[in-house]
Length: 148
Image (cartoon, helix red, strand yellow):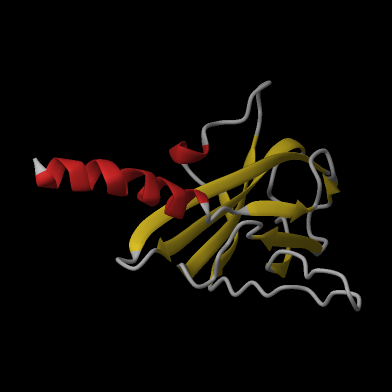
């Protein structure tokens, strides 16, 4: 009975810990145009990342064509990988007296010439360890852009 009570009390804490870490694509914005073979800046941020409770592991930036009216499920494949490696977000410098913004990192990515023209989904796939027990957490953020 004590174990059940302990689990019931700890479950909300685990939910809060995993909800406190999230990933977001700051730029480009949804609906933006990306040019093949031309560098584009992609900024990824962790708006609610409590860095004391999270250990960054890696990030994959990719793009998936959306040949029909709907983009495929990101869980079915990440498409064309534009970046795979470490993720080390830092808070941007703030104006004096203003709060710092959420931690972020900018990446220069190139959509290859072979990528189809049309709507596509940019994906940021984030792997992080959270909490005192370093529980693994995988997150995917996406937004639809247009590739020309």
